[in-house]
Amino acid sequence: MSNEEQTYHVPVLLNESIDGMNLQPGGIYVDVTFGGGGHSKEILRQGDESIRLFSFDQDEDAEKNIVNDKRFTFVRSNFRYLHNFLRYHGVEQVDAILADLGVSSHHFDDSERGFSFRFDGKLDMRMNKRAGMTAAEVVNTYDEERLADIFYLYGELKNSRKLASAIAKARANKQIVTIGDFLDIVKPMFGREREKKELAKVFQALRIEVNQEMEALKEMLYAATEALKPGGRLVVITYHSLEDRMVKNIMKTGNIEGKAEQDFFGNIQTPFRLVNNKVIVASNEEVTRNPRSRSAKLRIAEKKG
Image 1 (tube, rainbow, N blue to C red):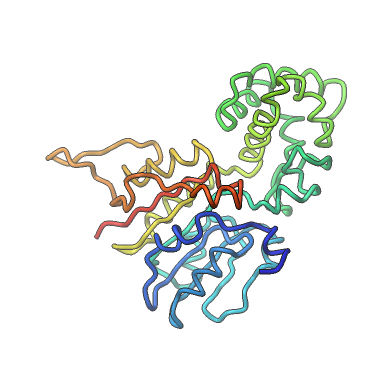
Image 2: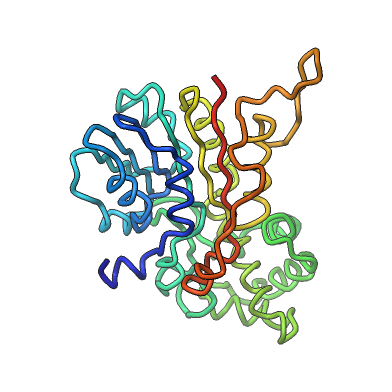
């Protein structure tokens, strides 16, 4: 593995997630989060000659990691369009779908992309640099209440109202353009000892809003439920409680809200059977090797026949 690949995104829970896909000869597989290509390469390594793998990524940087393999098709798109692109490629149903919802480490390490408070740069955060609103536009144009909601819902921040109010006051005097501008406003809101943790949540909240991550995830999970064959596997790695709740709900009840529908006998009507009842987390050894795997949670479910 070249240094560049290594730094792009060290695949988290690699063996556990590929095992969870239950690869079979001639199977059709989807990796909806190609990124550095770590999981996709492992699927191709373990799969036989007749498998097919479709990997999605909307980020043009991910294209540098494309593999030259006749079994592999790269789809340059957000995974929310899973259904359309499978249809476009003439695929009716698939054997397993893998999603690793961690933002590639590479994004955090690229100051140009504006994902991290460790660097100064433009406040951008778009995964797809060709589309959509930047984080700077969000903090400059959303009204105070909407900003507070984003920080509360997506960052689980208790002082979301105070944050939103400070941003609204500051932008009245001067537009917020860079990460530095933004940090000058929000840093004083946090005590020294919790500063890093809280700032990470602020940036997470903005990133989720900019990329409409919750909407995209919801659409992808419903499309995945439809696309899987009976016996097909849904394998998802999440990194924060909002994502995890949505994944858990769809696996347990068949919908994002977690509303359980019961049949006449009181059995819950869900399209899935849980493969692991208990969530799978990274080993201590993996966490030491790759600190970003600390918050990763892996869930696996099988489509009922």
